[in-house]
Image (cartoon, rainbow, N blue to C red; front, side):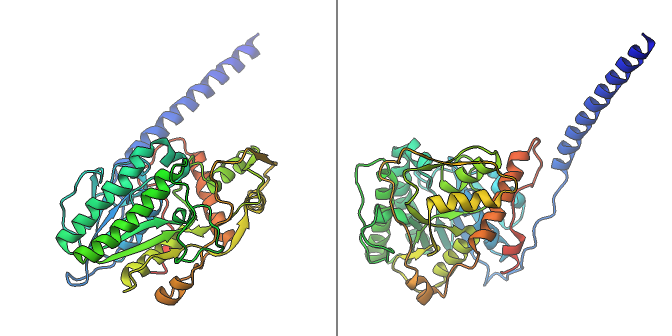
Amino acid sequence: MDTNKVADNSKQELAEAKARIELLEKKLAILEGRIPQKYPDVKYLGYKERKRILVTGGAGFVGSHLVDILMTQGHEVIVVDNFFTGRKRNVEHWFGHRNFEMIHHDIVNPLYIEADEIYHLASPASPPHYMQNPVKTIKTNTLGTINMLGLARRVGAKILIASTSEVYGDPMVHPQPESYWGHVNPIGPRACYDEGKRVAETLAYSYAKQENVSVRVARIFNTYGPRMHVSDGRVVSNFIMQAIQNLTITVYGNGKQTRSFCYVSDLVDGLLALMASSYTLPVNIGNPVEHTIEEFAVIIKNLVPGCRSTVATGAAVEDDPQRRRPDITLAETHLNWSPKISLQDGLQRTIDYFKEELSRTTFYNNQTYMDVKVKSRH
């Protein structure tokens, strides 16, 4: 009887000790969040070299990586985001820095600020996000683009419009060169995004012709990497999440449709090169290495240690393009740009990021992802 009592007391003491440790861990996390963090290294630029750069959608997946590079280069960066798909955590490591400013604003409404360059990246980009509110998507890509082009005209800024490979629709020409006009369903489920971006391009060149605005247009192909939304519904995030959790990896359709995946740091390098260049027509920025969706599922499965997932097929998605691969001859010729990060390397970094996201239990300040390897190249 006494032995049982001792055992019960020990169990109770252990449970109380565990509860106290958990409480202390939470308090430590809160205290760590209050300690001023050291910023990533930033180059010092004189006032002649330093630019004031506006990034719309700067708290999003691609935008935040671009912000990291612009900040480390020493520029003043203004991020404008309405947080429809962007997250403060993507840029929180810059909060309080003298060169960084964040404005919570929806660019469907006019914005009056000073800037030397504008990267217009604001728009939901994954099908579940842009289909969730198609009217909002169209407004962001039309009214939002008009507002940004108007701002560029007023302040004499150079503007880069982030367009998309979706302007080619389900292409009849393969790979897709910039001269191809596309094969798009104007009333399909993807039309709010496809046609929104096509109008954005039309607006850019109308402002360039009529108002002498200096425009650059990047047609961005499939991009992946850390800070992707865990639940954005895109192939990469879906497959990685399913593989990490040993769930069935679902391939929609027959799995023979192809995609070309570009790592986010390569894309950002392409955007920077395009902005710095004197080339004004649309440029494809993406990775020309093509894989079927089926192959891609197997690659991801093999990269996740101990993955027990099986690959299964599901119903095809309406208006899903069957082939997608950029012809990047123009980018190579005019920007001296081509992707450098291999699919294996990029996917490994992305898988590591997703694992970290899944293992999060408490909020730590400034625990965002910053790719040091990528940063050191600049």
